[in-house]
Image (cartoon, rainbow, N blue to C red; front, side):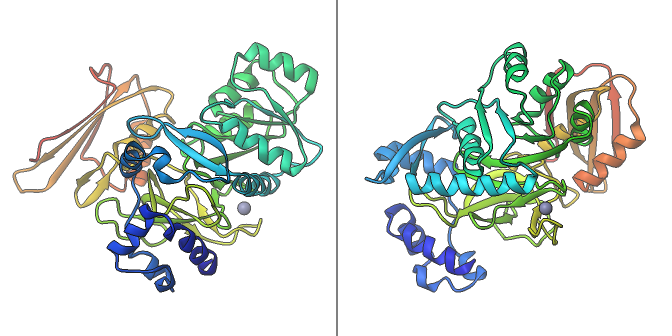
Length: 390
Ligand SMILES: [Zn+2]
């Protein structure tokens, strides 16, 4: 991995934006001899990219070899994402490997319901499917009626879509699907969601997929459904403490940071995604080892320290999705007791719910035991976090 990384860093170094990062760390690409050395390089943030693209057309990343400009809904506006034809070839191959590992075969007919324009999620999947040699239907987003009409004619065996649309299609009678690839919405990070989709399609394989316009793909599940496997031939993933920037050990929650290993145009180097996850190293039956076992389960842009532990409200929002009796709205109040300890009070909106189960799920996921959890009939705001300590 290090040799590949070094090669990429040498390419990055040619670009003024990244050269400055090396200079700031007083390093040259040849100084990066270990992961520890690499960790000395400054991060790249979305707001930095926004600024760069405001000050210079295409951030200075445009070159003769670029053949595609797609966009990322990054921060304040849209950021153009550049690809050379080799980049597209590499991305298609990585996606093809991911799909093969998930159980897609050449004779599969694959219905893709993601949009093909601007953000090109559909085009991204499409390339991988064709590379694998399966049969891609570029359906794009639209009504269930239209999708079912096409399915009636083409008899798809694989569906690539967001999970809510997949459920809709299953409930409206889509049959014959054996593999579902989920993207675009939280899937495996919502407890019970995978099972729901599998049941709706009569026990198919259902896998999660993770990537973003700046780096696509980052991880994909295999047919064994053990969590998101990092596509480590394509990107190097770190999990950091969003507060200190320190790289965390396996199994610790933190922000996903990605670095391309094989990208010509507009490579990402230590790019802070703002996504919350964790990585574990174990050998899956498919042969891959780096895995995000619980998927991507929140955002790190909003964070509070409660009882010495980081509390990510977006994580709570995801947890509540697995309780159908609850509306998903919540209010969290952080106080300080007279003894000076933190006190976390959570109110969730809904009717009767299994409070014990809720307490357990919250405790296990947040790693904090709230002092009180209450179910209330109505909350004023969708989500509200009030920190009364300061
Ligand atoms: Zn696997």
